[in-house]
Image (cartoon, rainbow, N blue to C red):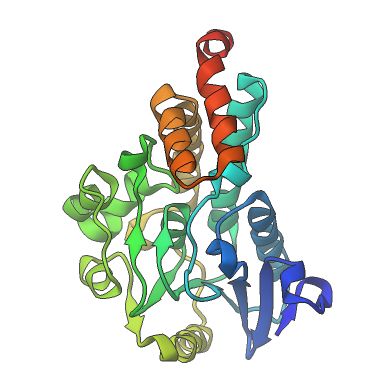
Length: 282
């Protein structure tokens, strides 16, 4: 297994790359932080996708995580920075839209191997791929309503198409349903499950089947790339609006304070205190 530019230390880069039989596997490799999407991780993913898109040896791209988590979603404390509200709003829109566009624009079949709990953006982005296989240790959570934010990753439209309106509402609404791998399979969120110790083997088998069949990039639920990109653009603006709302900022402060993450908590407290002033100039 090799890391970026043949790095000798796995810790030197958050994404590992492995190639075999036409299948390139990208492994999110910051298990101590549950493979959360920091700016560094999101940049690495975009770079990894770009490299695989132009690599003649890559016929299928697989995305997975280093145990025990697949991915804990976007690490807000590591991505948001204090600044002018207009600039902060624009930054959120830009980065949210860019990470999901990286999935939408990838030109080859994409297979996600969910090896453990998956949260937020890591779930919604997976549904934008051709297929999802999950370990029996996987769970899926999109707690947007509980966080006081709007759906992202095209989930406001795409979830209902792949698993029906009722299941989409269960995950995206106040119920905050967190299905296991078996429940996600039954609901239609994912297509395959595997024992945890067989996940890599089964993932490679599916990827090889796709190669043998000459599979091309597609989207589930009858969705099309251009439509999904328009949905992503709209959702990104809505999400930025929600991130700068008082209920969300207050909830983040309380959460981080309880976790004794005093530095990030103080940042959100400063945003909350100054919001009455800066919200007038957005």
